[in-house]
Structures are given as C-alpha cells and as structure tokens.
Length: 244
Image 1: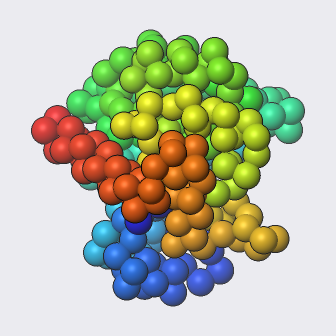
Image 2: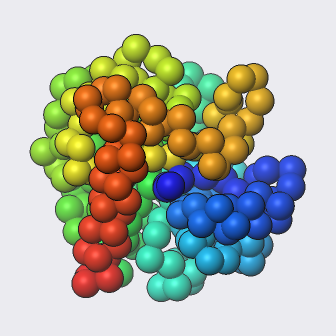
C-alpha cells in the first residue's frame, strides 16, 4: 500500500506510527509543514518512508523567514511537500505571503532540476495552476486532495499533474466525481493523517486501504488490481525522478 501524503511527525506518537508503517511495509511520503521540521521528521524515516521538504501555505506568513533554510535543505530532498496555496477566507488575508512562498519554492525547484511536489490547492486551484504553468521545469506536481472544478481538473491534467486521493476525499460525491475523471495512470493514494478523519478520529496511514475499495468501485476493477496499478504508478514516478 501507498500513503503519498501523510504528516507522520504530527501524530501524538510519531515514532510508533513510523514503526508500524515500517512493519506493514507501507510506502509513505512523510510531508513536512516547515523547513525547520525537516531534521526531526527525517529522523523518523526508515525502510519505505520518504521525507518531503515543505512550507505549508497556511503557515507561509509566519514561516516565510525559513525560506533560506528551505534552499539549504533542498539539494538533500528529491521530494517537496506540503507546499501550495490556500484560498479559504481565514487564510486569504495572507495571500501575498502564500504566493511569495510558493513562487520561491517553484523557482528553487526549477533551478535545482525539478522535484516531485505534493501540492495543496484548496480553493486556489486556478492560482496554483497559473504558477505551475510559469515554472514548467519545477518538477512533477501531485495535487493532494484536489477539490477544484472539472474545468480546473482538465487543465491540471493537460499540465501533466498527478493526483493523490484518500478515504476522506472519496467520501464526498464531488471527490468521487473528480477522481473518476483523473487519469488512472497518474493517481496515488494518501491518508492526509492526522488531519483527515475516519470514524471521528484521525486516520492512520495504513487505513489508506479504504481508498482502494472506492477506487475499485469507480474504476470497475478488482481491489487487488487497483493496488497493483497504484504501486506501478509510484514506481514509474520514482523511475522518472531517478532519471532526472
């Protein structure tokens, strides 16, 4: 199984979560919300866990002073996330800070030969795509928990974006509709734990399996076939990254 967007360091018991992921042989992209979290989160990594370097848009106004640290760490990280933009009303007041940070991240990735990027785009899909279009060599964008319109989805597909979907996203009618339109060869599974909820509590990384059930229904194929396809997608993504 694959959890391509999880905040392992933000669980109350991150070491136990990391150990369980390792024992289950779960492939995890452990995203960070600030560059200063990189060292501690990387220390959790073992086995099949990869740490991504991030600066979350909701924290952009507070942590943009960490951009020089982001630049120093970037050569050591093939994966970037969580980064992006958030257009929700409570964060729109810091929109310019968000744009400044995300533009800096894309420019740095562009100049460093590209990265695999896990991107937040809540209520900001068009703005995210506009910036990605300006930095076409920034790497492979993976839109995490995409909630845009069908038109924005089609534009994202045309720009070469990938998508990570999880149980929480797939519970909604809109989430299932968008997922059904995504190219199967560019879909990965995620949990977005501990922020995403399952049965009223933070979802656990290995519960990403619930997403496989829904994908099997949407795609009209067996769940085991879905799991193999998702794994094949990840291997292809990593092959491209290694070649670059």
